[in-house]
Length: 117
Image (cartoon, rainbow, N blue to C red; front, top):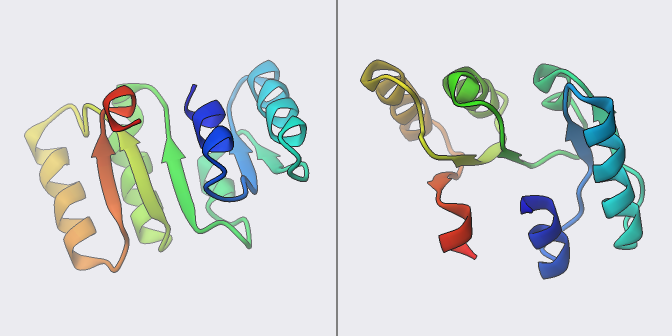
């Protein structure tokens, strides 16, 4: 749903997709190319995703227990971030993400996608 909304809004180019399930990545590539964009880089590892040359921002949609690690890696890589709720599972992890975001120049937003539409 996030990808479809992004493509429908024509907000930018999707240059990479990351998913551990091959069928999810293939479906994303089909949506992206079907919207007239070139095929994105595909990886199963978000750290490799963060190395993609033209990647400026990350929309993270992953299991809640991975939020803190992914968000911290994304901020450390100098990429803007739109993450899902809950931001993290513990107050300590929330504090770490907020501290990292405040110390960076990155745009970091944790949102309610359906309400943000």
